[in-house]
Length: 254
Image (cartoon, rainbow, N blue to C red; front, side, top):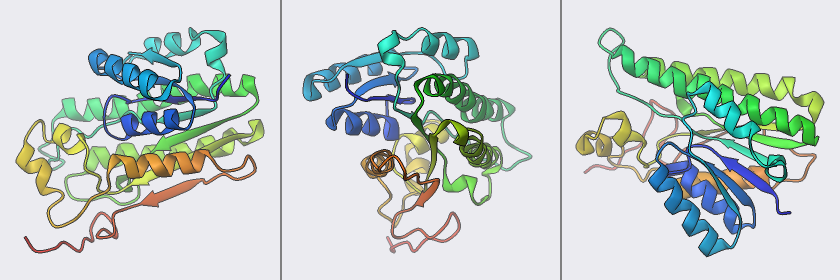
């Protein structure tokens, strides 16, 4: 059987591009997402274009019971997961700490931390049984440096950064690789979701720069996954050429 990659948050952005990337290299893929119509469309395109097998797991990563039952309920042959791309996550709002929505905070913590943990734990159990595996966690430059109005989103990604290090240490004895990918400014649906459909606010983030694209991230993820068994990239941060950090950009004048 072909190698298997499991990608969460696969219906858009990094996740969708990564699903295509692994399928293009002959991986069978397990794709997860909340939007069942998009998940179905993605599965059909992958099966037709790349002639690989696809399983859809349309569960919400924030739902602990659904995550564990879906993953533990996979057919035995699909439990031999080689690569997990733990990608599902979001930013909700960009407001001062004292003005931010508590609902937004809860959504980010439940998705970016708890959902992230549920998926990693459930898949790690299978990888331990299989004697190998590679967990690739999607972090962010927001988990390396806090910026104004980033508060809880940054905190959730700092948690991902710490948990990535913890997984690398704790799973070392099982020969499971753990890698963090930390992108900077990247143009996907991310900002549109963050600004709740405000297209102008979302586009303003990328004024004067050519941001990273989803395919750039997918290329890096696949590179990390394709290295020899004795090589593990523990932590990788990437930005577009015009970004040095969350605070420093060299923007072209409009």
